[in-house]
Image (cartoon, rainbow, N blue to C red; front, side, top):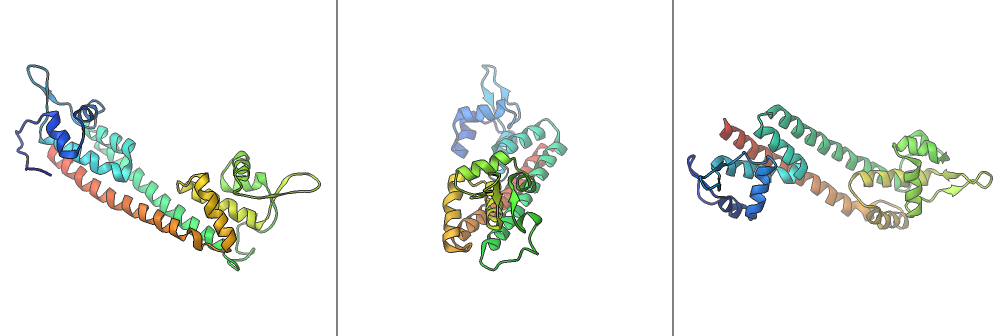
Length: 244
């Protein structure tokens, strides 16, 4: 963006800011938080930046879409203090999280298929799906607290019946499937108020078709993150090469 920078060129905060649509205060903040290397100062105390700072800023802004602001900040701070292996570790963790999120999406798709009429059988399902189950075992299977399942019940997302003798919540096969679906959608970043209409439409339609659009959107966001990570990696590599 803009003209090529020469290695000895001196830049003002406003020069960096304009190239990226930022405020000069944002550029100063990035330096203060370690995203940019420490700038030299003029005799009058004004900051002067170099093409190295411009490259650092480009790398940071390219890392944010794939890794998020917090992780991108941690990556740049590690690089700028010479802890490159630490930066690589943070990047690896982001890739691992993206892979886990893809696994979550696949789990949601499997949970939806389980809601389809005639999908699977009790013999093929996990133990908690095979029949009646109480709140404790179900919470343990899903890795949740019983209070979370009660919260979902209050929101109308799961509808266990009550044992007429003990009054305990009893989750049938459909209830367990609903709980698993809610759990996976929550892991995918969906809010309870977003899940409720999706789940209701699934129940009314008797199948997963109403949520297929949401899953396609989710898949698109994961693909965008993957592409952004590639772009961020290229910019970070350029910055590392410039640092030498």
